[in-house]
Length: 312
Image (tube, rainbow, N blue to C red; front, side):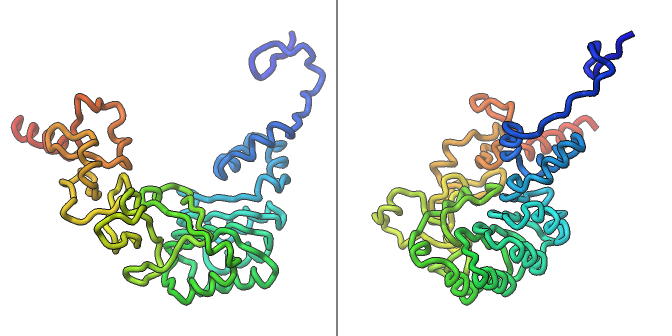
């Protein structure tokens, strides 16, 4: 009786061994677009895939570690992952990696002197002094950074920022790109600025400085003072990223975020409390009609409690 293949069909040649899979070409090209968790999961398909992925350093030259993996990442795990690039790591993005320390980052940078992009926002175990020391060492080893993101690292000062700017070419720093407030929650914070933080013109602290999206502000025709500043100094609309004074502040939102009057009016409202969700929380409205309206979670809970009290 002929044997069956794994898909249930008869195997025409049961004696012959299964042909070896050539993990190359188009497959490896596709693997280059996978995120780190997907790439690690792909290694578990078979031993053949595991060896092919782990040995191809091209797949590990750009490493981005996001949540939830970032919350568990340690120095040892970071060194193991980046070592697969065989010293050819070009880009490293660590988002909210709370367990990574200066020592772990130093090991990675020291072994990958060609790294040009380093993003470590929210890595609270890193220190400002440690980052400056690591990047100075990288610069002395003829390394050249093109992009650095360090917002969220504790105790950043003007002195740290000045020291870091010396590690970049002057013509690179002279180019100023805008950062919009509504993009700050993206998983990989996209910014063309060589260094994501700057000195706030209002409070003189080192933070991300947001640019206004209002046409009048960008053209300099606004009657208000310059509205370029950090989150703590300039009130901004959660949706459009434009500035506003508190006379323009809209009514309350369900998610407690600030909205300008224009954005507040165009968003769908709860049928009971007449409050909207901001666009960041619009996924809560999936399946609801913008024309028929919806009930927010707070009103649904209140209605349910009132019904149970009445029934009791």
